[in-house]
Length: 431
Image 1 (cartoon, rainbow, N blue to C red):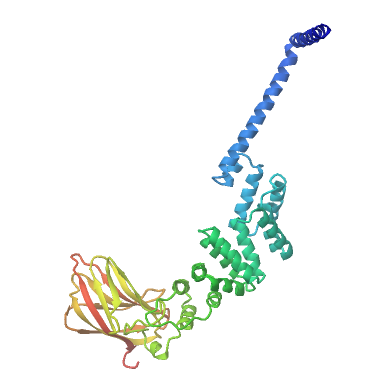
Image 2 (image 1 turned 135 degrees about the vertical axis):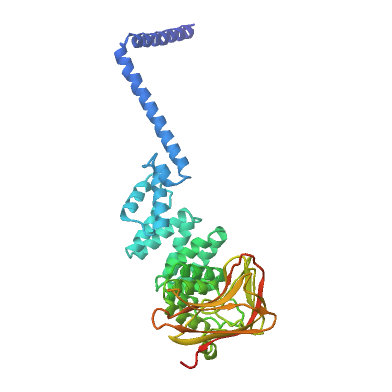
């Protein structure tokens, strides 16, 4: 009985207390209540906006850190992504970037980006030991990171750790099926350093595909030709008919386009090692015997919708078919004639009237483009017909010349089909 009455007394006191508080709150003037309500509302809105802004920033990170930075520039992930982009695209990060990422590191301690930034900065400052330590720490945080593995590969190669470099490259190619271009770009950057070059060459030897892609990348970039040839190393003398590696053509074309034809020819001779007889005349492989060596100092033939030109086996002849519809160069070679008087001669048989499409041999100065001679192939009606024409190579501005078999379109085109033999360019009368 006493317990129940005691409970009633407690409930009575509690109820009285609640009603008293409600009454007291009701008794507060509105001037006191409204500021509290407004402050609470603003705080709630601020929290909602903060959450919204960071959520939007996280979503925009998928589109790129610059987009996310417009919403939440102080977001640690935004700062780290911007730093990561600088690391990938600019190479060596700045001191300001390193400081910003270290500040963000406190709020994103599991990210490997600050460690990578620090490693690249340490490398730039010559502190290789610290760089190694930071790369190892980054690998523990994210062992499957593409950039961590690339940076580790860089460190292995620069320090001559060939076995570790090969293992890391194997992981990269196994984990990332599209790593080829990234890996080649990193190796191209490392190859510039003479100290890293032997290790880069060792990595190239372990993967022929990487080797070819790297040499092509360096040739396209216009890297030092001597360095490219050194990386390629000694190769067996090419056999007749053997297709030259693509990097050789890219390297030589790049040099010729930049006006460095002497360097291009010297490298071509170093690669091909042609015999004296092959270089004795004005044209290399004038008999179309498919001698080894890449263009432009060897023949380049075209085959397509406009027609084609190709050697006729070992017969010493060139077969050409031109449809007469569009202008086209079917065969080209860059030759080297000294100033003086010359004569070009050849024979052609087949069907070529020259009226419904015209095939001509032309010779013009490289760079200047000055036409030296044009020999139209006309009046050919099955039987072999000889052609010859004299011309002069000027003393200035024509150190190299383009020899071309050109097709010129006609209004009413018909096939022009010829077989060319006996092509010669010789001094005219010994003068």
